[in-house]
Image (cartoon, rainbow, N blue to C red; front, side, top):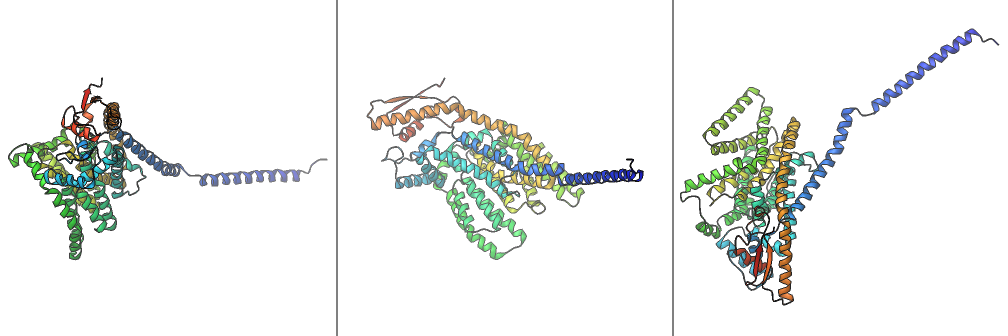
Length: 538
C-alpha cells in the first residue's frame, strides 16, 4: 500500500512541531530549575551563616580548653602560702594547716587592713578558696577570665557571643605581656586583687548600658568591685564620674543626678575605705620610693609606664592591637564626617600633634596618644554608637594607670587592671569598624596578630609546663610527709624537694626567700624544725 503524500507531509510537520514543543518545555523546565537553585553569592552567604557560628564555637571551646590546661600548671607561689595560712605580715596562731575558724580569719583581715593593705575583700576570697583547695582557685580564675571576654562582647555593638569577632578579645588576652601574665595573672595573690573584681565591674557596666540607668544591682556590683584593690577603687570611681558627666550631655536632669548620687554613694564610700586604709600608709612608710622628691617620683613612674607599654618587647603584640584600634578610630572619624576636608584637617592635626609629641619625648607621645584616643571615643559616640559606657570604661582604665604615678614603683603586674579594662574599648572599636564596612581590615589585623599572640601564650604555657613535674612531685612529697608525721608517727625530720627548671615562671620560691618555708610548713602541717632540702632538678 502506497502512503498518501499529504498524510506523510502532515506527520512530518506534526513530528517537527512536537519536537519543538518538547525542546521549549525542556528548556523552560531547566530554566525554572536553574532559577530555583541558589546562586554563588547565595550559596556563599548560606555557607557563611552555617560555618561562622561553628567556627566561633570551636574557637571559644579551644580557648576554654587552653585556659584549663594553662591553669592546671599553676601552683601557689610566694605569699599565696602566707595568706592561705593567715601568716602574711601578721600571723594567727592556735591551729594547724588551714584549720582556722571565722574569728581567726576576721582578726587576720583586720590586721591586714590596719598594717598592710585595704584589699580585705580580695584577701577574704583568696583565703576561703585556698581553704577549699588549689583546684577551686584555678577553676574560679578560668571563670573570671572567660567572663571578661564574654562581657567585652556583650558590651560591644555585636552582643552575640557566637560570632567570628569573638576572636578579638580572645586574641587580645593571648597577647598579654609575659611580665603581666607571669608576674601577676598566674600568681594568685596578685591576680585575685588586680583582676577578679573586673567581671563585677563589667557586669555592672553592661546592666547600666542595657537599662540606661544606674540601679541597686549595678551599685552592689560596683561596690564589691571597688573593694578588691586600690586601683579598682580609682577605676570604678572614675567610671561612675565619667558616666554621670557624659549622661548630662543628653540633658541636665536634676532629679536623675540626685538619684544617681544617692545610688553611687556606697561605691564611693567603699572606694575611700579601701584607698585610705591605715595599712596603706603604714606600707608607704616602709616602702622604698624611686625618689624622696614627689615630682621626681611621678616622673620616674611615668617613664616606667611608658617603658612597660611602649618599649618592652613583650608588649609588642598587645601594643599592635591597641595601635590598630587607634587607627580604626581615625578611619571612623573620616567616615563619620559630613565634610571630608574638615575630617582630613582634623586627621592631619592629630598626626601633627603626635609627631611633635614624639619629637619631645616618648612620655609626651604616650600622653598625647591617650588623650587623643579618649577624645576620638567621645567624639564618635553619636555617629557610631560609641555609647558612654565604652568611653567611661576607657576613663576608668586610664585612671588605673594614673594612680600608679604615686606608687613606690611600677611592677609589670600593676598594669593588669589597665590591660583587662582596655579589652572593652578595643573590642568595641574593632566590632564597630567591622560594622562600618572595614571588615577586611579588621580580619586582616586579627589574622596578622594571631600567630604572635599564640606564640606568646605558647611560650608562657611551655614555661609553666617545664616546672610542672617539680611542682607536682614536691606537692606529693609534702602531702606524704605530713601524713606520715601526723598520722603514722614517723621520726623523719627532713624531705628532699626539687628546684624549678625555669624560675621565670614562678613567683619567688622558698630557696630564694626562706620566709616562704615557714608558710609552706604551716600549710602542710609540718613542724617548724622540719627541714626542706632543695635540690637542682637536672
